Amino acid sequence: MSKPTLSEQEWSHFFDIDDLERNRPTELIIEADEEERADLSRRFVVEGMKSVTANLTLQKTAGIIHVKGRFTTLVTQKCVVSTDDFDTELSESVEGWFADKESTVSFAVAKKERDVVKHQAEVQILDEKDDPEPIIEGRIDLGELVAQHISLAIPSYPHKEGVKFEVGDEDIQLDAKSPLRKNPFEALKDWKEER
Image 1 (cartoon, helix red, strand yellow):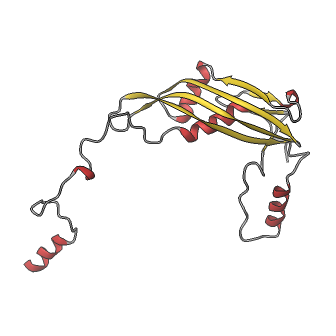
Image 2 (spheres, rainbow, N blue to C red):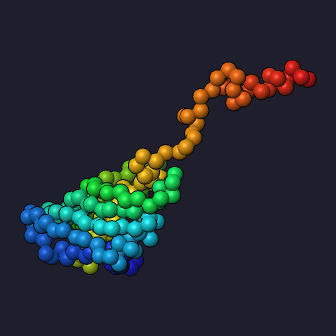
């Protein structure tokens, strides 16, 4: 089996884990440049990204690196109602765990692998902290970690503030004389009487 290698993503910000001191947090701010934001826009299928910044804290404890912090981004999307472009500011938390899989295996991972070998019907899905991402070539990609969190935060059906559908089911008021009948089977009653 070949060893995994780090590959460039749309926004890669590699951090060398040798720069971390054990049990001492390291704080840093990372920011995507114009070209990286354009690449992320294509990846997330949005009109544009005017800014992408993350404030992160990294801490190394017992062979595991815990990354936490917050990202802020200004995303331009197309409104699904009016098709106008509009900006949405997103700010959410980021969290991830990394470990050297060759030198450290958590008890939870070892137990899960044992259960798979025993062909158990149900295999428990582990929390990310119990099954951390691999450290590859002594580095972790903080940009990709943040990008994954951004992808989950972008609204799937963006609505520009104040815009709504002109007429929707909730706007139709039915009365007894309305051609739109309340009971969909009411039309069958008339058909039966005609026969």
